[in-house]
Image (cartoon, rainbow, N blue to C red; front, top):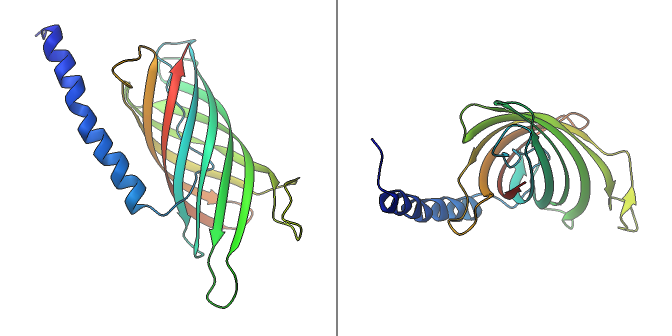
Length: 197
C-alpha cells in the first residue's frame, strides 16, 4: 500500500519525540563516558561515504571510573552489508577514590571498525582502538604514548536524520568493550550525527 506523502511526513515527525526521549534518558541514566569503539554513521549507498561527529558516555566495570568524550568519524559503504570506518576519539576518564583525590586522564585514540548491516537501520560493529596520546603523567601534559589497545562489539541504530536535511543521519549505539592491556571491560552509549556524500 502506498501512503500519501502527507502521511509519510507526519509519521516521520511523530518519531522525533520518541528519539528525543531516548536521548535524554540515555544522558541522564548513564554515567558520563566515551566509547573507544562505536558504530559509524551509515552511508546511504554502496561506494558512498559519510563523515560524522559523536558524543559518548560510559563506565569502566572493574573500577569506579567513568568517561565521556567526542569522536570524529569517516565511513565508507563497501557493499550492501559492510561499512568500514576510521575515527579519532578524545575522552576524559575520571576515576574516584575514597582515600585520595580523583584521578583524571584525557586520551586520544585511533579507531578502525567493520560494521555489518543487519537491516538498513541496524548494525553490528567490531573493531580495534589504540590510544596514541594522553596526559597520564606527573606534569598532566598531553604527550604521544603507546596507549592501551581495546576492542568491542557495538549494536547501532541509524535514524533517517533530521527532517530538514536530505543527506544526514542520527545514530544511537551501545557498546561492550574490552581493554586488552588492562584486562578491563567497559559499557558505553553513543549518539552520532553523520553527513553522507
